[in-house]
Image 1 (cartoon, rainbow, N blue to C red):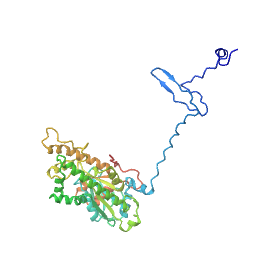
Image 2: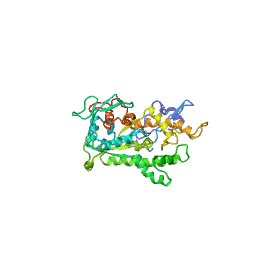
Image 3: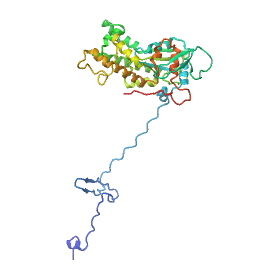
Image 4: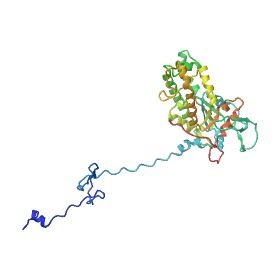
Length: 392
């Protein structure tokens, strides 16, 4: 008699073979069992599959919860962010009439920013104008035709900014000059020429430290000015349609921000705040103007910010260049071209600097040149004007 488990008993009643694990289809698992991962040895062309683990094995960690959907912006944020990107001519008129327009002029030095921003503060804006042959980025002629009745919606005829809605002006250059005045005086320097001497050029050893100090001042002054605009019902907040906030209703006034030529080298946060708080107009310098500015820079030096030291347009004095002047002449046109591109990326609309600087173009005609870049109410599109943002 064969005992259970003896070789003879096993020969008479062999145990069934264990099930073969298939790597294409894992073996059936017992309830509560958790499989071990499969291991492949591709080099040996063999596969070793796992066997079920014991029910006491620790379960895998639960999957992470799905991410929360982004929170919707508040109503106040929705009114501010991007409000100037969809401006129409009617929106502009209503903002001016309500005293809630926040206008910023950007562009090269000597392109008319200070001249036109001062005009908006002091000049009466009551004439109606005709704009003919004007396109963004190209010179156009603008002429006033006097007053008149009507709503000014006929083709090419636009109402000027109403004189009853005053502008206030903030000039960043002036504020920087005040801040640096004591330091310049201590060094026996004054005015724009003194500031040019204090800053120097990239060929000077002290230039980069002076530029950093200047940009830090400009950053603080510009950011503070922008924050003050939003505090007073600006940034398109109370509406391009009209009534300012109750706290600001008694002193509602449009604001024009006269920026520096180096505004494009401020932080990305300040540049973004500028474009969301203000309606930004670029006074575009033509190629001929850039050539004129290059010669003017060497004839009468001015303080100029050259942007970042690493990766900027200034690459130092090359072998064979006779001193720093030759290197400056080589790099300065590239600096102007870079600035012009960056101003355009900040702006909502563009007006040729020839128009802004032309003494024959009055403030009403200049205003009409800005207004013409916007679509009429109910029109989808901006008449071919290209919009962008520089966020680098």
